Image (cartoon, rainbow, N blue to C red; front, top):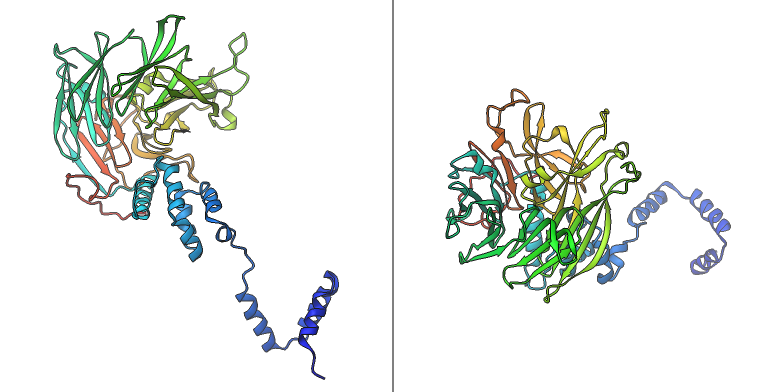
Length: 497
């Protein structure tokens, strides 16, 4: 008798769970081998995974993409056509770019995919320490002391010469040189350069800044010369003064100067600042200070934290706090009892481009000492804490920020010096660069170096990284030659990783 299949299926659906399981187990036991093969084929064709991302509306999927890294996003594009479309959409690309660069694609056309791909490839090269080209240049230094005044920004080098009365600016891409000095050739001290200006503090108590495009000069009289931090970005200058005389009394203060608008802002009664960050947006400023709670005997019973304050700078000269929060330093659990403070000397060596803290045992113990570089990304306003073992860092401190949350530093491994990378968000936070050989022989001792380590500095950004010492300047390029300007750059023999 022929079985009514629809009726059989309908009856099977009405069975409860245990009876249903017994029924299909007995049916499976009755199958012949060729029927088993057919069942296996049907099982292999059936997907038991639900495509959550692919099933979501694009607006919600974009919120999930915020939790992905660039590498994750590129790998997940291969999952399915739907995932490729979602992760390659303009909203998704815009979110990824904003996470890393602070920018968006609102002003770009249909080339938003190529823009993200270009940045992603360069970011991957930076993460691995795998530049596209390497070359050497000879900058006209007269003394090793001039190297110590060295600063870098966006393909331009700046240093002091002629007895610290003249600033020299060298453009790496155009190979042009500019010179700046005051009318009466004042002696200059701390030197900083940004994409648009070069600025220095004079021994007569002025801050002089020259525009690189027009060579126009701005001069500001400083209230005192007891200065702990001197930071510039764009056309803006921020200076931290110690024990400044204010209307409300004497205290530390941060004064912000906007050279384009001529406005200034004073943040009064600030703590001992570890860092001041100038956002790419001219209306925002960030301060970071180290907070420690100590008892009457000076002993700290809780781990120190970074206190971060974001300010909104108003046109009338006032400033208001828009956000205040704390960050953990992230020291290993076995090192929570270390004494933590600001390394003012090392911080000055870095031209105040980052905060530098020390974490060392309060008394002679077997505990290791750490150096904690703290970086600030002006476009995203994100702060990142790096943890390095002090005995592994070459002296003088050679360290530079190359991109968001990534720093390069020269490590001393029993006299052998090499460029290492710190990326706290990577699976391995500290690792050696793949293809950035310093070309230095092993240092024969920890004492005086035959190669004059005193005059060595590491500088850079996401396009160029360079090491300068008494023998010259070695430059590594991470930018595609079609994007990097007029300079001729021989390609490296290695391939990208």
